[in-house]
Length: 79
Image (cartoon, rainbow, N blue to C red; front, side, top):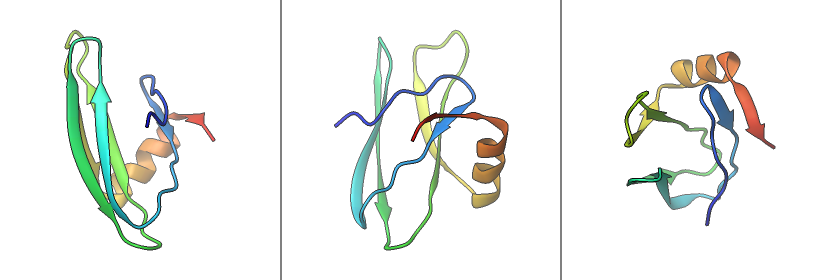
């Protein structure tokens, strides 16, 4: 299931049920898979990056502090 697309310096909020979830960052030339396990009521921040000029993206978990800072610095792409 595709949830959405991110532009540079943008973010989206996704509410997921507790449990294991697959994450993938897909570009025209590659797909980077990862996974995430969420506990009930837990908030997690995931940082998806693509270096300018690269065709590969990366997925990593950000600390709550870094995640909140990224949200404040960026623009929301979807509700």
